[in-house]
Length: 545
Image 1 (cartoon, rainbow, N blue to C red):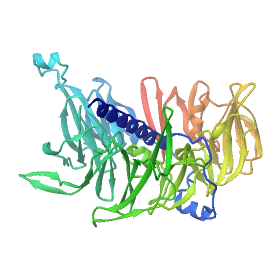
Image 2: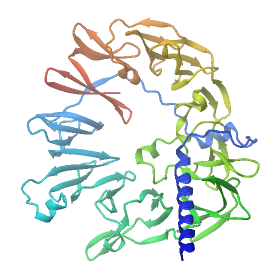
Image 3: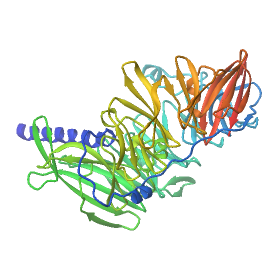
Image 4: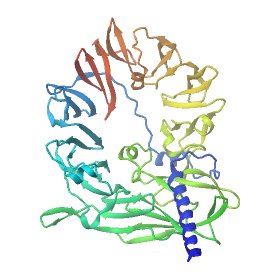
């Protein structure tokens, strides 16, 4: 019995170590190159796989948003939804930009996820029982959950958190379980089918995909409703898989077009695809891959060209809705982590590829970059985060290297108008400069800061003095610039007229007249720039397009 117990503990230990590797390797930056490219990795394929972000904001017109009386703006969600605070009660609500209250100011705080928001307040008139006080139960804490249009969906007591799944569905997390509801307030699980709070979710073409990355468990739920004794609720599971085998680890993902994938990595002492060295021991693994369509009831086994450790795409449950919306992969494509193998199939590092919905490998990410680090503009890939060894690099659409600067530690910033703004470590500290699309220096690395280019200009700072840089590198002194470099990220700058401050764009056009004491809020939402200014105790909110 003791020997069997030790064997079980060893299996659990191996499973835990492997699970840790599979969970985290997709999100780490690869440190080695992997296999060589072949001819199929072309620019044409890259244009199909990647979204190209050519949207450069230029702000030219400003207007004042009207807020209800006796409230001040707190946070902008978009042009028609602004979190406001009552000036007297200091409670929060939601208004639009036309002077209408959508949600009255009745909450101690308002939190937002996607298009769902929750207002929280404490009911001080409710008396807690002795047991509630003893165990710290907060049943007098009320959470009212709304859709962005101001329609109240649910009222929940106690400590909860919530996370939007997409624009139509949201997950509500209690202490030990989770509930999913839609924008009409319909719940999709009932008391008979409580789901562990470890699950995260995505909506996959009308199906709810639940995934517990800590175990590899998953289920697929049908997003239709039925009437149950006068109460609408979601229908039952279509498929589910709960890990029982301690000798295997499972990866699951949605590929698009109705197709899911499940990959099993099973311990194998004979035929194996790769092996790991953990605690000085060799562990050998064989992968099996199945693609299935739960609505059609079809499945097929696929022979993988290379082992796969994890997926990132617009349906990945473990990413927030905001992270999924910011991915630059087109529909039907996924980023996957792939082990770099030595001659004996030992995993020596991790690299990243793009696969299509049939799990064909179509693009290899540049050496030393993770999927979230590279953006695409004008047919080039720009490493917005540090590449391997902190080099600055530009890539073609198929991720082939255009050029690389590895003479120092570089920190990439932006790539607009064919201009690569970067910073590098010098003997004088971190200094900014500009490279062109050929890797040639347009602006020497001597500035304390350089903003991204907008309207063909960037803003630069040196020893507290502000300049405007053209795309050919010529600089012009900005002698009226207010010292706040954060504004310049948006292609605007604060300008001073006497002791008052206003706002101009990169062309020097006045957006807000210099009649205010301070600029308190700046943010971009839905393509609009929102700027909050103050004059004495009066606050004004502008929308600029």
